[in-house]
Length: 392
Ligand code: FAD
Image (cartoon, rainbow, N blue to C red; front, side):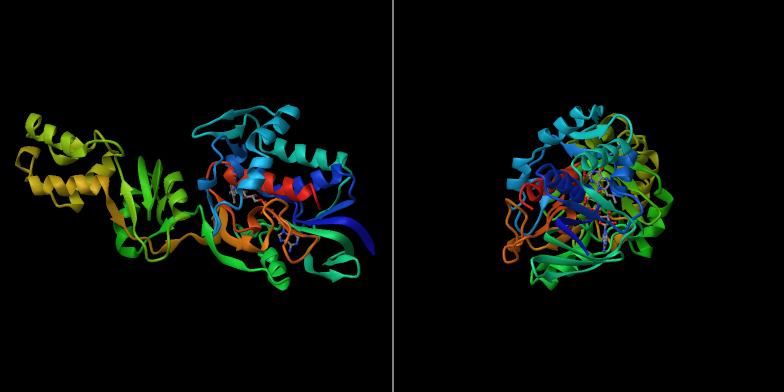
């Protein structure tokens, strides 16, 4: 039977990073993953260029039952520390928008950097090897794997969330947490397109492909980014972001012209272009198809000069605060992340170690810390992995 110091479950962003750090401390580390290759989500992330961190890391950009939990790890190994690793490996990067940093070349460079660092730190890697159980052993833990039983003083659970099952997501880490008496905060798909009932799809489907720069709000949180109409509902960065704050049964609010004084624009058009159709005026602000839809939906056929004040107010309201009620989301099949996870009440925020179970660590997406879209989730994986790697 193999005896290690540290067994890391999951060769994703968090697991590889923790393994490198523990290996550099001279620990005998084994990383086990049932996937055929390591870092699969890194490889496909950011459209193949990996949005590996964000310049604007801050506590309010992470969703958790305890939003302050992530702060310690994020400060101790920050976005600047990860950028230094990228620079050290000679991987060129650029800021795309909103502080989001991407590789100039390919996301594979990040995977190669991590695999190279693991090899140099003497970390062993078993791929294509499922893990079925973790239990306490004589001196630490016993891990049941497809290659037999392995023992270690420490186990780091980095098996990720439930999103994209076809890429190896299993939910296994939650079972491990529960078997050791830790709580799991309710799991939900996050950063996911929202779907609508047939009656909405009747008018949405013809708009499929239309994109608009808007603001989407769920509850008190709103995001100014692109909104995309699809054959099943709404997508685009603003919708994905809002989806993490949306709850079944709630409405979302769409502002199609953030910051624009729509009432003033319409009033001016009524005076200066009295014979113009509403859709013509709206098409200066919005994609034409959407302008036509709004005109039809509000059943306004008169030219601008003849549109009543009340009707113009209805137009303004629809542009600035269009209320829509999704019926659901695309679910884990396409969700970029899983909200909820191992309850942070049971973890030490400095080390990621389970409070009542010395030697057992939880890092990355399996923990109840979920970042916004834009590199926040990888930074959480690096920071939490780094923290565990210092002590495991
Ligand atoms: P994962 O990367 O999911 O790794 C978990 C590993 O555990 C997997 O390799 C899995 O095979 C393995 N595993 C699971 N169960 C078992 C088991 N029972 N036995 C053995 N192994 C097991 N975030 C960003 O910050 N920027 C982006 O650009 C970005 N783009 C994304 C694009 C897509 C399409 C998706 C789906 C996500 C994206 N994310 C992005 C989110 C980001 O990929 C995740 O938050 C991050 O990968 C989580 O890292 P992790 O190491 O915790 O888990």
